[in-house]
Length: 444
Image (cartoon, rainbow, N blue to C red; front, side, top):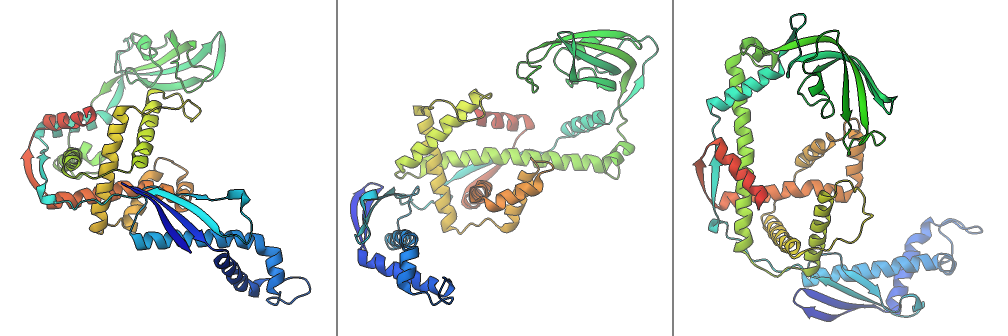
């Protein structure tokens, strides 16, 4: 077996792999010998079928397997000896193709782009500012008020009172399109909070001012993007009967309210709210810190990038953004989306940072534990209520999905590793300052 270099320019590599006819025949013979003990054939005892007969019957299939094994073995041996790591799956093409005949040498051409040598990162050269936000009393009180709002009750208004925005009205309703009642457009004794946005736009506003026992005709148009296509964009008439008009009554902010939310008393509930707020602030501050770190890394370490990896990333970015701009298209039956210079620039950044973080993680022996993967699968499975088991089985059988779940965990752990070695100073800021810093992330 011979491997001959044909190209070595930058990160581009090309090789010719030759497997001689004798080597191939020896591999076929070896496979036949390995298979012989398990093969049965009429007229022969199990394991006693002559090799010549086995070769005649199974030769073509065994030959194909032997060729693949020989080429795979040569490629593995090459990468082990050279230390090259291909950026993408190598392209392998058999010379001669269909014209190849048994008894001839097998010659294949292999080409790929190697991952570049990546300089060591000196984490101490990174300087970062970590934003710290304390849960102020006003923020806790606001969150407490919002909790109380979710626990509010409704009491009947005085007889003859008109419904106001924020009131709860109990109604019967039936919808008609072109004079015909439609499926799913009917309800009885439905409690609707006016202004909640529960119904289609324009519906709730027309019930403001209604009284008990009144019949109200509500005229609306279904949105163009409405889920039920036979109703999308259609004008509709809803005949409504009002049975009750109730005013909201705020829940008292006291120990009883705290117990409804699982706290021992009001002081304990306030403490829980403060902890939750500070956890949220910490998560947001970490996103700001991570962006600042990635921005520094992007300018701190430079190396050649595999062009095909950048092209693939740019195409993916262009395709993703195109779908965001065309949300009604859910398949790939559309024309080619040509990446722009902006897409290519973003792709270069992503590839550079991705390779750098992967190399830092490799050298630091960063690992994603089984427990972390299990938690990631559990979190993802929550998006498919009732189908969690099927999702688990899908992930177990799908290596690509496993990698999609593992990658962000690995990246976050590498970021934590770099931050631990960086020069980090804490800066206490207000909630508003943190919010502005988070909003700025979307502008970049």
